[in-house]
Image (cartoon, rainbow, N blue to C red; front, side, top):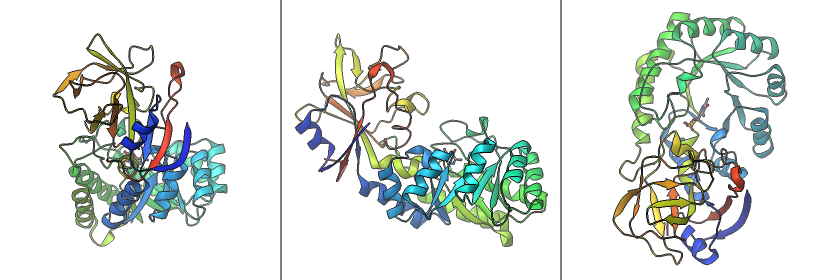
Length: 381
Ligand SMILES: *Cc1c(COP(=O)(O)O)cnc(C)c1O
């Protein structure tokens, strides 16, 4: 991926003056910093950033500039990235499965918090990490809905196992905490409420006062023009329910959003390569590129279409099959995407809210995926 430092006004200015033939990811630092301010101002605890959503230097640097001081890292690569860009930041290593070699790197880089969801992995931590002042958060799961897909399928202990793990964490001299992940793109405040109540029950059954409750990521970004996610409502429920559930034993709160922090700071401009026989739309980007998540989370409808000269296409919306550029037949966008009926070859289709899980999963399959990143003052024209 190329990175250009050129600052232009907005995507439409760029597209009409340079007519790029490859997808372009536009980045508006002020939009990213504004979202960080919403979290830091609204969330009743420590805001950390889940680096995997978008590890670009510019993203990390702008979040640090906006006041983010903690980072959820999943690998030695991510730890070193944060140590290089924000040397004094708190590293929270919340990938619950680690090799012995990875644990050694974490100790060396001064990780202050780990999460765990199994006895075998807890034993590895106890053997490899000096306990003093280091937190271990037990990650548990619940069968709750409201998210785009189920995060409990891969990680999270049952409540019963969580009780046993939490006791053992405390006995081994680590700072005992609990954590969960409600599932990505979760717009349902009640999901957090159920998890927080369960956390209080687990702590009580274990007879352990937890230091912190990390309520994970999963906060929603805007993926539909009709629904603006209500982050303040989710923050409010987290605040109220934590007091209600824990009373005098109330732990400090931590969150680790990925998507909701970085999605809105970016949009992707793709180009229409062809409208085959007036029906099938072929874009220069697809599910092997920056649109990967459309297959698992669904397509965004925050879409803007312009002609090569920058005129808005305002025709009636019609659902059409839309394909990515590779020769693989699964490279198609789901469910007949609504696009204006005056759409034509050469037009640009802009998808907004595309900062998360786009660059990281972009591939060079079939020779596509040459995405450049361009910094702009504003994402809207
Ligand atoms: C991926 C992940 C996150 C971020 O999730 P989002 O849905 O992007 O907010 C946070 N915590 C952990 C442990 C994760 O694996």
